[in-house]
Length: 238
Ligand code: ATP
Image 1: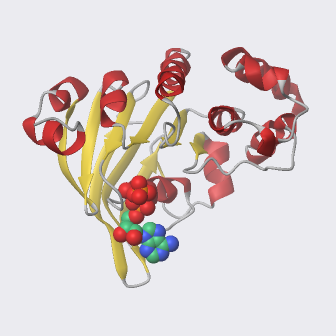
Image 2 (image 1 turned 30 degrees about the vertical axis):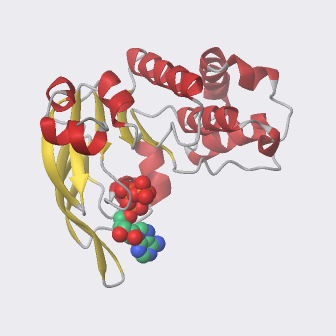
Image 3 (image 1 turned 45 degrees about the horizontal axis):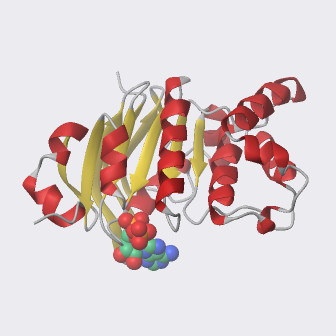
C-alpha cells in the first residue's frame, strides 16, 4: 500500500487546467522525483498535496485517508512537510524563529521541540552557528537549508521539496542532495521536484516525467537516466 497516492488529479487556476489527470504513488521510505520543464505542473501538484490548492477532480490519499478536502494545517499535522519553491523564509525573523514556525505549523508540543532542533542542527550545523541571525541575511544555499530545516521541524513522514537546487552553485547542489539522501536514510520518505534531472535521478529510486500537466513517463530512476527521450529533453544530451 502506497504512503501517498494521487489518482486522476486535475487542478485548475480559473479556466486554466494546470494538472490534467495525474496519477502517481510514493511508497514508504522511497525517494521519488517529478521532473519536467517550466510550467509542466510540478509545483501545482505539490501545492495540491499540501492542501494549498484544491483538486477539481481526482483523489489524494495519504496513510490510507482521503486528504483532498483536509485543511492545509491539518495536512502538515498528519505528516506531510513541504519546503516550497523559492524557499519562502521569513527574512526578518532569526534562523531559530524560522525553525520554530515549522514546529508551530505542525502543532507540536515543546517536549518534541528539542529533538526536532537537534536533528536539524545535526544535518545543518551552519544553522546552529547562525541561529540568532536574521533569515534574510543568509546566503542562498543557507536559506535553502533553512527552508528544508523548517519543513523537517514538523517531523514529517514525507518531505516534499520543490526545486532545492534552484540558484545554487554546483558544489552546494551536491551538498544539498547528500543531505536529502541522509534525511531519507533517517527514515523520511521524499518527494522531490527538480529541473536538475540528473541530480534528482541520481538519488531517487523512481521518477515521473511531467509535460503540460500530464505524466508522460514513469520508471525506475536508473531506467529514466538511460531513456533516450529523457536524455535529450532533460539531461542535455544528444
Ligand atoms: P516551474 O518550474 O516553472 O514552477 P512547474 O512545473 O512547477 O514549473 P506550475 O508552477 O505548477 O509548473 O505551473 C503549471 C501551469 O499552471 C503553468 O501553465 C502556469 O502558468 C500555470 N499557473 C501556475 N500558477 C498559476 C497561477 N497562480 N495562476 C494562473 N496560472 C498559474
